[in-house]
Image 1: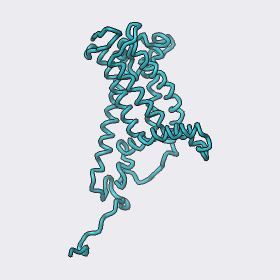
Image 2: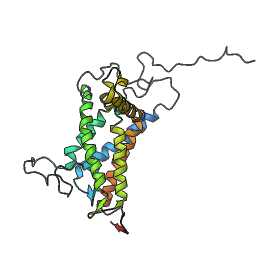
Image 3: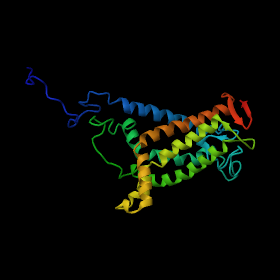
Image 4: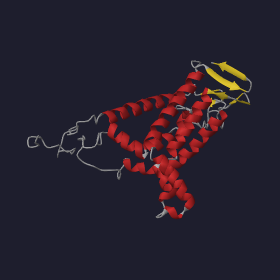
Length: 277
């Protein structure tokens, strides 16, 4: 029979005191998750900033990019209040996206899931559980600038307004020259608002707003049911966060390629199928 006398004791996944950056006893690929998050978020941030500054190719027919909606001022037919106002400073670059993109941007930046994601992947704070980090002190989110993370609940409320406009855009995307129809872009924008809805309505802050404010939420039947629904979405908050991030980026790319004449568009009207570039 074998013995365990000569076996080495298992090394626990703990940090050594004053350990070096990246030092760990873990033998799994702990670096893979933060690396993928870094590449994914980094790619989206670069593209979103580039697209927001373009100020062109963001509409096509009934479609408008979610990066630019609601278009408060602009040169497209989707603009709510016409072209750039005369009071806008001439020395500042103008793009309709810059007027509204800060709302969903700051909502995601302060999101509880994204905080944990980019703290690990961008700041290595820490890069993973039981892995040495580059700093020796911990300040938390009680000092500037991280104390501003507490504004997440307010960006949440503003994000619902933006989401409402995106729902309206999705509905308008089914209308071609005054007639109801179906296009690929109609499906792209509709799927986008569904995924964004799953993300914003599954938010931790919204869960607290719906029922977390009560000591016994079960004593409030309607709020209790809403709380359970939000809890169901919240359980997959990470998946909703990534799915909606990909969908909003793809929706902008799709509309942009349509506007540039690169993507061939098919849409259907009653008793008619049409195609255009």
